[in-house]
Image 1 (cartoon, one colour):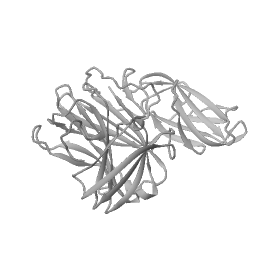
Image 2 (cartoon, one colour):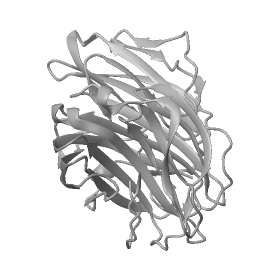
Image 3 (tube, one colour):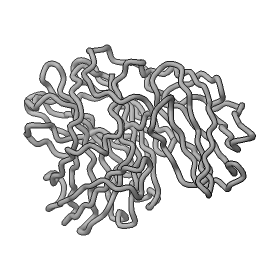
Image 4 (spheres, one colour):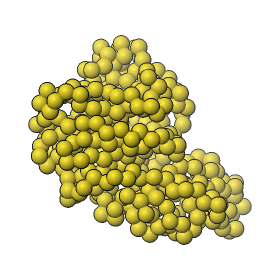
Length: 362
């Protein structure tokens, strides 16, 4: 990650795939939330329908949950057909998150309130089944939170070499239907020399008053990405006073940790530095040719001090709980901007996919 003066900020945040209505408008300034979203405790009860063949182990029907909450469900048959895929959606959303196989185990983010969780299964002949679970979300996401969803489908993604990395890099990006979770994943093809890294950035909203963020996305590393060294998911926000907050976050293959950024200099003479957390993460160890679910929660105060709360990888939570100054006087154009960066090892090329990218901000 590097600081570049531009008409737009050039650093990013990873995303959320929340099954709610999309909204990208500016929100009013709100106080920083003291509590991070937390998955709901597991419930001993399960919901099942003999006709659908779907069993939802968690959450239980009628349960009160936090956000994000844990979803665990399986289905062996659908109308006597062997199940080939299973997925879920929330309320009246037309977006269904589907996975291959007959089991889904993940975390789902949703705003506070009562919701209908639709768990769906598809048989080998194309027949579909549905099991509904009613839940009440008592998390820290308010009902009026702004949800910027399916950001991977936006048409204004830009690519640039990160001069803070190796000698050089180049990249292209496009929409693909396979592999995908939603049917519309973004493909990133990166070439690099001497450990170069390519930044893919998207300006997607303008919400200077937001102080709480939840990033949710699905990431797929192709076989060629065996040479990926670090995977960076950042976000930039220009606040109401014109100063820029950088929320930098990455899975670091060098240190084997989740890292976050801090300004170790001053407001006008900044030093943007990576800080290793105590939470383990090594992108080299991520299974290739498989979707991985990444979720990140963080908040800021009015002075631009950021608290990185927790990160979830494939439903497993790692607490960060680190507060640092991450505000910069950069004179950037007001925007919320997300970056997705792939750093390579040595010289080569790789392909990485991003799907279901959603950022919730309030």
